Image (cartoon, rainbow, N blue to C red; front, top):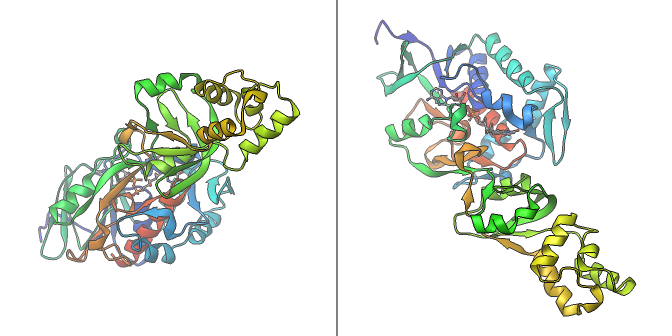
Length: 397
Ligand SMILES: Cc1cc2nc3c(=O)[nH]c(=O)nc-3n(C[C@H](O)[C@H](O)[C@H](O)COP(=O)(O)OP(=O)(O)OC[C@H]3O[C@@H](n4cnc5c(N)ncnc54)[C@H](O)[C@@H]3O)c2cc1C
């Protein structure tokens, strides 16, 4: 052991949601903890999350809300630290919250309340936070690990890697966790941007140019997976919660299929409108359940603009309705890590212990949070994974 190296029991790389939770739990066990982060402030993603109000958990969180090559992996951690555990913590700090929709819990006031709460908890257990820490090397020692930063070396018996994924590099995402995993011979599941807007090619954009800014509640399907939430057509392509959700399942070259009226029997509605008033134009009848611009777009695309309903046979109505119920789009790509809320893939869970997050073949080395190949749906699930995996590692490291 080098006399010049500082000594801690646990070093955590990354003062994000997962790293801070792990620090609190390890600290409660009397472990001397140092959290290193190269950023100027901790929890920057918490600060900007949920439009500044942090969708900090989802009361319905269960393993089915997560993507992973190994879908069973997340079960243990999610069962050991549940949304109710985090809610209890939030309530203890009298942080007011509300359910927005679909079990998504947000702060009433500001996401900064969550950061302040975590920092207070860290302080209580005397966890040391080092910001602006530029990590140079990470190495195995006889008794643990040595982390060398520009400011010096730290020795520890447990090293928890909580440095997040690749999303939003502008906010300090570096992919360091993947480098550390590779250095220790741990496999990675290929990473890709997820919860991200999808882009369209210039011809598609030109075709949809009249629809930029239109929002509609729709069912969006990719293969066997479907989400029903808002879709927003933008000047770059498709966005909105339903598109972000499906982006985690979509692959280049594949289609997504939109049902713009999942709960309306539009064919029956048009037939009834034809009976009531055959002179009514198709897009006028269509504008009742759909935004006006979409109604016009579909009527024009079918070459039926201003056609009176009386002109349309049942067969023509059925064929037309299919274009609305099964609008098939092949996105050109996604906006990438620049705007992706999370990174899919990461450290392969098959080499981690699901109870502790420890690498089975590298005792003392743990991976938690977004850098692990566990990715949640949109709606507070990713923070729940960060809390739960951080808790599990903090209990063991
Ligand atoms: C715009 C946006 C909004 C979001 N909103 C929500 C939401 O409302 N609800 C939800 O559940 N999820 C949301 N997410 C996802 C959520 O923020 C992440 O899943 C979560 O922050 C992951 O936590 P983490 O601790 O694993 O990683 P991070 O929060 O990314 O923390 C990693 C930390 O490691 C540090 N770090 C990185 N590289 C290095 C390095 N080389 N050296 C030292 N330190 C390093 C970073 O500075 C950072 O502080 C959102 C994401 C984005 C981008």
